[in-house]
Image (cartoon, rainbow, N blue to C red; front, side, top):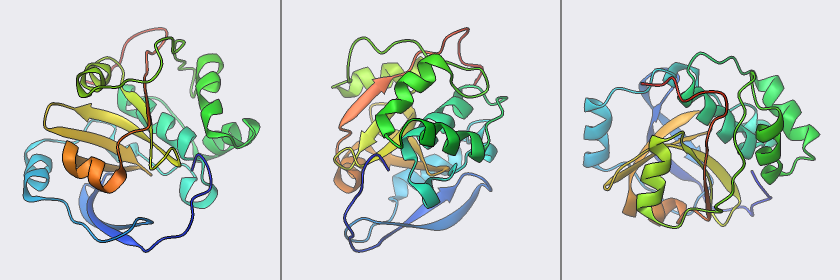
Amino acid sequence: MVQTVGSSRLLVLVLLESRTGEMAMKTRSKVGLAALGVSSLAWLWFNPLPASASTYQSFGNLKYGDCAYEAMANLELHEFPGVKITTNEVVRAWREGGKQGFNVIPFMMSTGFDGKTIGAITNGSLTSKSQIIQAVANGGAWATISDSSHAVAIIGADRRFITIVDDGIVEHWSWGTFKYWQGSPNLVYPIVWEGGTSTNS
């Protein structure tokens, strides 16, 4: 988490478990109950997962609440499937950053995971769907949701759907359903990787 969130009723989502490629139940702290729509399930059925899907992880977030760093690590895994990132590295970076989520940006600019760093974010948060779609095509996007209390990696987007990695799990939503259950992204930063472009085809 980026900051502490109050308790709420549990929301159970039927999601695609990215580490095994099998359907799994994921319990999340949200209000109400929802399930992925038929259109989303159809998309997941006909669209293969990224090459790095088997390596996405929660990176300690379920225990420590380091979602900002977890999201950035998973975004890097999506863009560069060959990188090696461990939970210990992610948790250590989060702790050394004072357990403050937004410190992940300077960390990624100066150090990064497995030698991969990002360029400076100079244009601020993205504000439109078209900007997010463009950012995803050029290195992905890091975003905060739920009133900036949580962070996710945006790895896919088009005019109809948005795909994120959240706690190591791939979630595919229509834009409307995503905004209804997760809330509109509060901050969305385009990520430009230094020293070469993405190796994810």
